[in-house]
Image 1 (cartoon, helix red, strand yellow):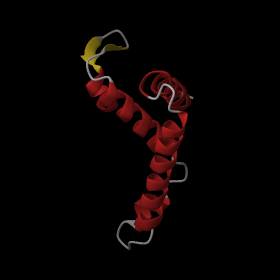
Image 2: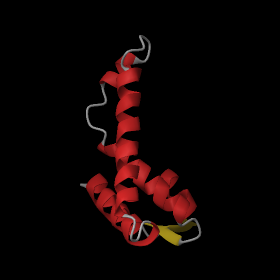
Image 3: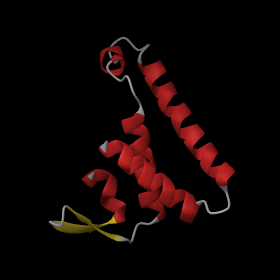
Image 4: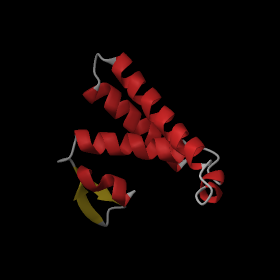
Length: 98
């Protein structure tokens, strides 16, 4: 549920702000990211020493969510955020906090 919330929120923010009026660019970014992530898992599964760790990856939703959060944080690096109300940080550090 947490990853679905992050994916929906940051997809919406990216599409409304950074990709306003460029829906096709947003779609191609998603398509490219999903293709690269799938390719990494498929190629990594063929390498003998790495195949055990790549075989455990069933769903790429976590990686796709991280990609969207990373792209949003790089588009908006100076926005102040708070983690559980305990400490504040700028959006550039969001991928490492979440």
